[in-house]
Picture 1: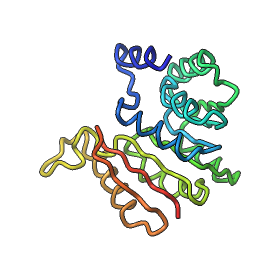
Picture 2: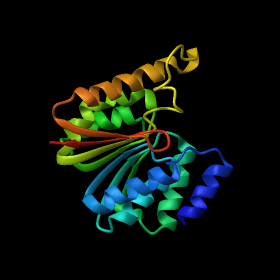
Picture 3: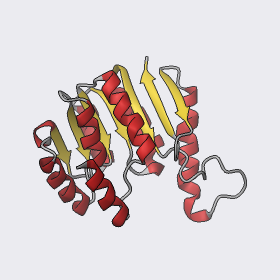
Length: 194
């Protein structure tokens, strides 16, 4: 099933987690066994299914604002037989995160793979959603290598790159988070709430 989804994503230019990063995500979930997982950016459901395969008794809340992706993800969760362990929300992540904070939701694991330019904006609220010892796993933090590139950044990418740089700096300077940065594929940060 996952291989079929990967082929679909490649053929239709759907951004899903890369293979090596996906293996790391799977291993982190399998090792830590989170009961409650929050995913920002469902796409076609690939990474959600991957995480639920790693944690057979886990429950996933996942957010997707694109209507086509939302419908595809719903079908894929059903095909994978995990729809009973998924709460799929069709809305803008910013609003959903606010609602989750207001209702004092807590998660053991957060997979951040939505709009890259919003990572820094989400960070303070995502921290409040984490249980102690919980993990924030952020994908694509180097954005095609541009975040680490010196010199002039193309105008169309400048705001996103600056926001990702702020996100990385915030993780480095946050005393409540123990963060490691990995040079795998397009960059990953894994932060544990102390």
